[in-house]
Image (cartoon, rainbow, N blue to C red; front, top):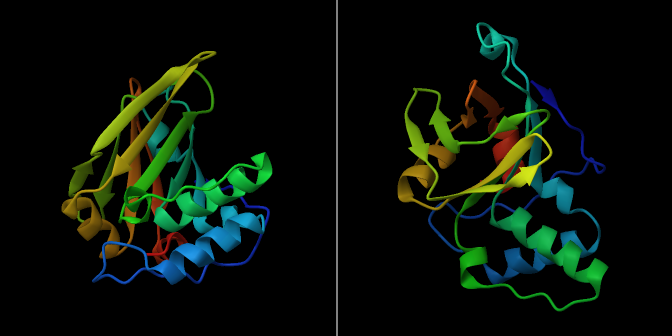
Length: 185
């Protein structure tokens, strides 16, 4: 796996309380400020999954770029877009609630069939919402949103993997404790 470096090196210092399922007003304000300052990428994890062991026996398995974000990252990205487009920013309670968003993009031909989270112990949690994107060339992206208590428990209790399922096999990105902090967990 190769990490795709963001354009900014600063780490986000917005950490949502494990007891709270919603971001506080202060955390929302800080996330908006990061986005408006052009630092939205500091709140997301970008990864290119191309692990050699996953490719063994699967010669047609393409690499997958994944963007993983939580509520802080999603708000920062919305604030960045709103400022860039000179549009008002609307933040809903759904946006500030605990969630994990994954966007997966096959680098060459491939169709994302589903996305799941997997703990180090092997427990898996499927996405609460999954949408396959429109066919773009020879690949089809996928977007998954995780909101369930099982997903939250898995994410908040240590390192985990984001698994993208393609017809030729699985690709995964490991999310370590440093990445979890970047996401605000």
